Image 1: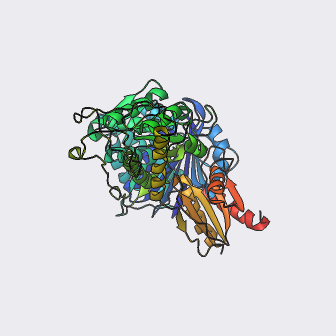
Image 2 (image 1 turned 90 degrees about the vertical axis):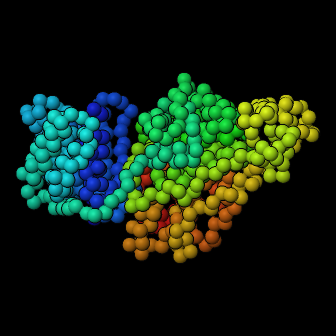
Image 3 (image 1 turned 120 degrees about the horizontal axis):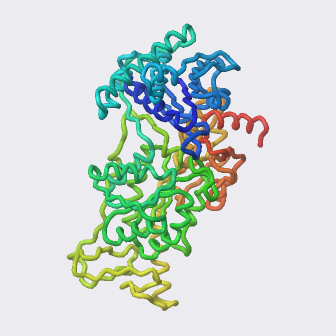
Length: 562
C-alpha cells in the first residue's frame, strides 16, 4: 500500500486543518502516514497544499504523485491537478472541466446545514475518509478527541459535518474509490522535526532559549513556550537576533545550557555572536533553519543553501561544530549530541534544519530517545585551588566554573586574553598560546565526528552523496533503481564540520544530491577530500527532493554518461 493524497486550496480555506485531522484519523487506524506541506508567504489567498502518504510501514519521504486530490477552489485545481495519477480520484468544491471529478460542495453543505462555512473543513475530511474506506466510527472517535477542549455542541456539530462529507463521498464515488483502510493493531508515533529538536533540547538539559520569530524556526520557540512548565525550559522572545544569541551566550556563561533558533537572515545578524562564543569559550547551540534566499527569499519554502555559510560563520579562526539531521529521530539524537559536545569543548554548535524537516510529520514504530544520554562536564571544585578560566591544558579544554558557584573569580573576555581572562598583547607568547589552545580543541573534536552513513557502496556502480534531509528520498530512490537492475548506493553526511577522516572508495561514480543550485556539499568534499563528482542532482525551486526526481536523473545520467 502506498497512497498519496493532496489537499489544496487558498490560505484561509483550512487546508492545514483538513490535512492534520486526516493524518490523525489515519494514524488512529493503525497506518503509517507521512505528511508535508508547502504554502505561500501570505495569510490569505495564493494556493497551498498539504500532502499525505499512507502506507502499512513507514515511508518517510515525499511522493510526487497523488492518488486522491481534493481541490478547494478552481485555482488549486489548475495548479495541482497535473500531479494526480491517471487513475486517481479528484474531489472538487465545484464542477470542473479537464477530467472526470467528484463534486462535493463543502462550503455550501456547511452553510446550509450548520450556518457556518468553517465546517467545510470537517466535511472535506469526512469525504476523504469515505473515499479511503475508513469506518465512520473511527473518524468520529478522532473528532471527539481532537475537539475535546470544546463544548459538546461543537463536538457534535463536527461529527455531523464529518458524516455529511462521508455520505456525500460514498454517494458520489460509485466504482471509482477502490481503497479500504480497516482498523489495524499497529501503532505509529507521528512527530515533526522541530518538535523532536525541542524535546531533545529539554532532554539534554537545556534550560534557556532566546529567539526572535523567523520562519521556519519559529515552531521551536512556540512549542517550548507552550510546554514551558512541563519541560522546564525558560523561553525569552528577544527583540532581535543579535539580542537572542547574546542572551543565550550570557545564559551559558551563567551556567545554564542554552540555545537559540533562527533562519538565514537572522543567522547573518548572529555571526558576531558566534565569534563571541568562540573567543569566550562559552557553549551555545544554534538552530539554523534554512529557507531559500538571499534576503527574505522564499520564507515558507525549503532549501539546503546555508551549509557553507554555517561552516564559515563568525570572523577569525576558532572551533565550531556543524551538524544537519536527516529526520526527526536523527534530529533528536543530534540535538542531544550537539549539547553534549558544546559543553565538552566549550564551543558554538550549529544544527542545520530546513522548512521540510520543520513542518513534515514522520511516522515511527518506535522512537529512540535515550540512545545518547545527556553528559555533564563540570570540574570538581575540590581539585581547583588557584582558578584560571582559560588555563592552558594539553587537550585545549579549560576547567569551566560559573559565577557564584564558588568563591573563585570567573571571568570572560572577548579580547584575546591570558589564562585568567585578562586582555593581553603578548603576541609571541600568551596570544599565540591561546590561539593554538582553541585550535587543539578542533583537532580533538574532529576525532569524535561520526563518519557518513554508507548503504550498498561496496556493490554499487553509482553512489549518491547527500547530506541532511535528502536521506529519505535517496534511500527510496535506491530501491526504485534496484527494481530496474541498477546498482546504486549512498554516502550520506549529517556531521559536516569538522569533517571526519574518511576515504571515498575508488572505482565508483559519485553523484551529489542537494537541495541547492551551487552544490555546496560537492564543493566542501572536493576541498576537504579531493573527491570529484561524476555528476550532480540539484533542486532549488523551494520544494523538497523526491525519490522519483532522483531516479529520473540517475537514469538520465546513465543514458547520457554526464
